[in-house]
Amino acid sequence: MVERTETATDAGKTAAGDRYERPPFMQRLLDNPFLLLFLGVTLPTVLYLIWGILEIAQIPLSPS
Image (cartoon, rainbow, N blue to C red; front, side, top):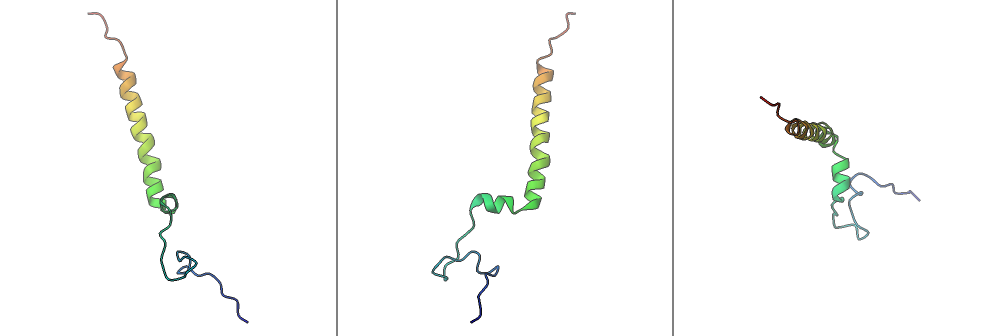
């Protein structure tokens, strides 16, 4: 008897075997390295930019 191994096409199928089930959102997000790279560069940049603007806005004006 030959054992059947799971292939890439079998990974998304249900127990019935004839309906494709989409992977969960977080799995799709974490499986995309370019999206993770984009988020890893963009989010800190935006947060530090906002933080810097808030810090500059809090500097008191010098008396003239």
